[in-house]
Image (tube, rainbow, N blue to C red):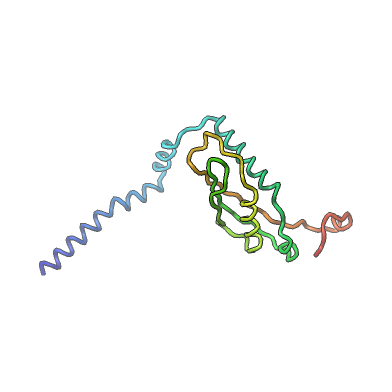
Length: 160
């Protein structure tokens, strides 16, 4: 009997020692945790924020200039949006990329991954961007033009 009581006491102590972890997890979702995390982040000046945003615009333009609709997806009239997250080093070289949310078409998903790979090297990040590597999300929308009667008469799209 005493071994059973001892075992229960040890089990109760183990459970009680986990209580701060559970409380900490609950606090992380509260506004107090968010305020603490925001205070821990270095505050950027408007010029620094503008430099980072301008760099991101350069990357988007570079990707958009190389974007092509895959011919086999076009012939099957496949459309969709693929969300890709990619990681760049301080020199603008691609370290890794992965699909976060697929388009529903393997052809379009693979085209998005190939685009990120083919568009490198990217411009190096500004010095105010912190970290050895920078993680960027990008969403590619692949959509075919809608052919209306007027479009068909003028000829800017085809009906395959």
